[in-house]
Image 1 (cartoon, rainbow, N blue to C red):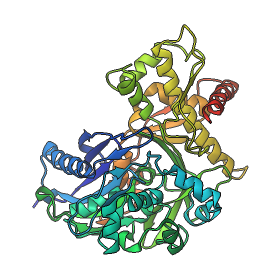
Image 2: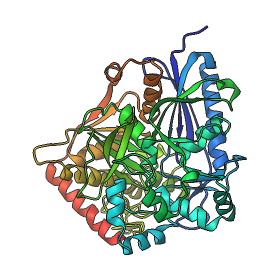
Image 3: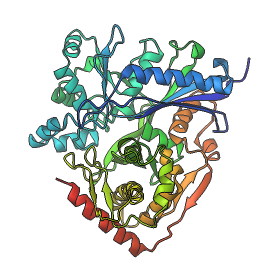
Image 4: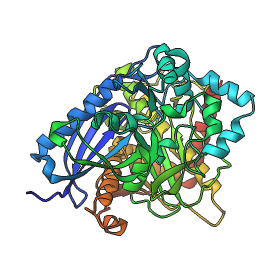
Length: 497
């Protein structure tokens, strides 16, 4: 029998499902990605077909095995990571969804959040969950489904409704409905989970009208939890690691010590700083969240999230037709020396951290007759770098005066854009470090699974596998960076209605 020395990572994202096979040296030997449809019923509403999430993730898993020419008896375990906050609801008996998944970007429950804030619940929610009240999180999405989907309320009355984040939905399907779980990192994104005590919070369940029977069991991020039964090619392979995508990326970047920071450039941008065993409340509108849980013990992170990161490039491609493929944006933006005074604020779904303004809207300022699509492309890339800078500066402001962030580790699809990474180093005035393996979200899930089944001994053995591809150093003066951010913040002020 072949050695079980491979880990299959399933990475279910906002715009695509991916499957990555890693060897014992943390190197990817097969990568398969499949995009799926984004459903926009109305402006501000974003949905996914839950069946498509499952189908594309299943298909990419099998295709990755075929691409590498491996079988189940060579795979030690599966690690799963996922888009967070997206809400799925289904019939416990049949496994059929009761409606489309409501995606984390969706703003339909903004009014619910406004009412909670007006009724004085902001501090309670922040204290118990580490989160700020926002439609971004899952709780109001679950509540909307309960209130607007007749089948959901009917199923809830007979304890036959299941609601969960995407990890829960996929594991339910991978195990033919036998396993209904979520890990603590995903649970901490729902606004229903008490991050200090651990577990679903009864007061919050009552506040949002969510029955405990509809929620999954909360488990560690480290397994094993169950075995695959729904995919013949993976029959019997243990599911041994679960984490939300940003927490998985933090681990994949080997940010294992408090104070280490990573940023993932995906559909959105998400910066996490390891805070160890301590919950670090923010004075600058950042979040406290569970990073990982092992043996019932939680490690925490401070987080800032940008709703529209790489999605602004998709908008240039699909909405405006400026480019045919996303990588083309780098050459287009590089064809001009600067953005010509143009600022693009991509507040298509409001503004996330550190502003948390769900009423803000996208804006382009500084247009002249000489503005070209190249200037807009450059302004779009700059908007990503500026939003990430806002996160890091808020994070730094929460630290004691004598503690400094020394570098930013980066991953995600857009970190392959050298121009963007140089912009990022310039505006931050810090080194921006890109590893050789940028599939760090999938890698983090693989590490959780591999450690759980003994493929890797400990995190020290994994840190030796983390290598730098390139470190981008600041190439402009500190004053130039200050001036650039000042212009950005003027544009931000104009976007806030």
